[in-house]
Amino acid sequence: MKQIRRFVFAVILTAASVPSTVMAVEISEGYLEGAWCFTHTMSGKEKSEEMRSYIFEKGGKYSHQTSRTSSRMKEGFSYQILPGKLKLKPEFPGELNVKSASEDHLVLNYFVDFYFTRGACR
Image (cartoon, rainbow, N blue to C red):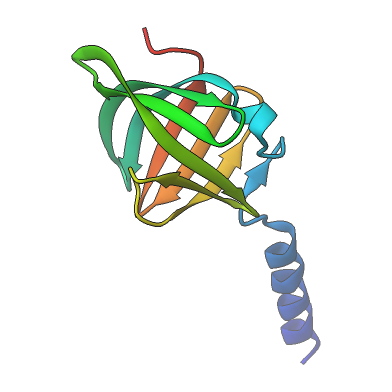
């Protein structure tokens, strides 16, 4: 019985210490403001290159590159910051979960993981 209690206690401690998201920084307008490169998506081990630039502005507006082969930026999109989530309308119909955020990297999840790096795509 003691062994079972120790095991259960160890499992509870381990589960409590594993964060559901990794947030080194808080998502805010100031954090998002500026150029970001949507580098790729990941679905399991399957990686799909994107390399499309996004520009976020204060006031909830953003524009994005229409394709990686064209430098044309499409304007007039809006974003909304929610606790642990980000809405990018109308590009994505739902809420994207913030999977991780650090000073220069952002990973969002909407069925697959979306990887962003601060700065325009090269």
